[in-house]
Amino acid sequence: MGSLGWPELIAIALLVVLLFGFRRLPEIGKGLGEGIRSFRAALKGGDDVERGKEGQGGSTHGGGTK
Image 1 (cartoon, rainbow, N blue to C red):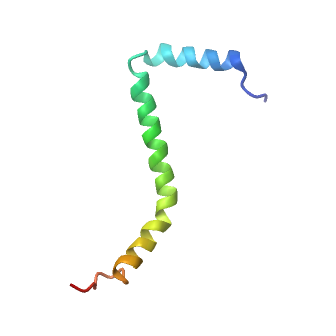
Image 2 (cartoon, rainbow, N blue to C red):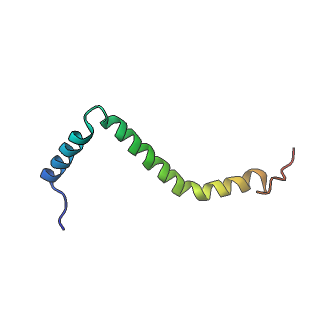
Image 3 (cartoon, rainbow, N blue to C red):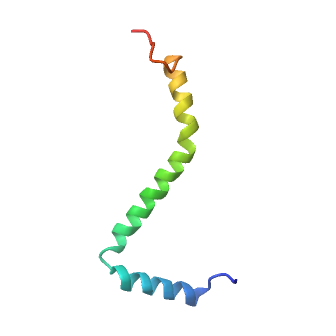
């Protein structure tokens, strides 16, 4: 299977515009961007969250000092 060329990309863009319309395209783009950002944050943040909990209180069991 070959790569996508200009004619294929134009056809896909026209299909998207016909399906969703011009008014919904910014909303769809915003939603896709937020989804990608949250996915990347979840991939990176899983280890960071665990390290952050240990670094702040020294223990993850909730026995911090006041």
